[in-house]
Image (cartoon, rainbow, N blue to C red; front, side, top):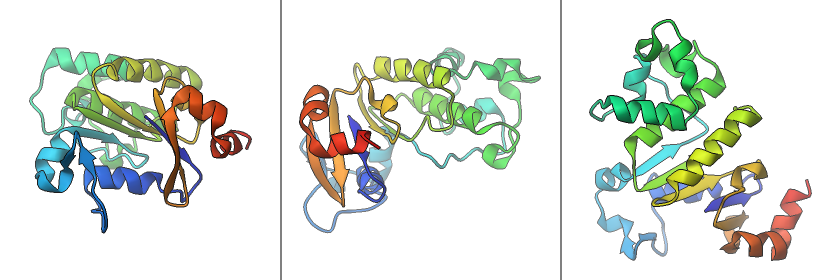
Length: 204
């Protein structure tokens, strides 16, 4: 599901509600007809991997940054690195054992994003949320990761918040936000052809 809309439209608030960083004051948020307020926050969040615009990198090895809070599995780690197009790691002097500065100041923004995406893939959750997760990547890297996300979505729920409309190429459905309201929601072709607000967005 691609989530699009202008600044201040409600996209980030929607993501925060899914994660229960915020709770609704009216109505319900349900997953498979289950009100998420009835689920422990720790249990809910264990099923979700969020890659946001603000990426936190720990002052630790790349391996521990990707495998954070989960048991180490070499095969899973290599797979996550490959799917996140983070093979630059192997070119570093100490490879996966390279120590990153806090906030990852000793690597580029694009490299930080790829490590964060690898962390999400390694977690293997039921729900992925990518909030502008490829904004610092070059076109080639973005395309590789888009293909990986497409493969991941075969048996997962994937939300992609995007300003760059190239990021939503493979979405099954599009959710269009404006002024805190979902103004259009439907399959990709219908929204692209019939949503006046979506057409206004892509005209800029």
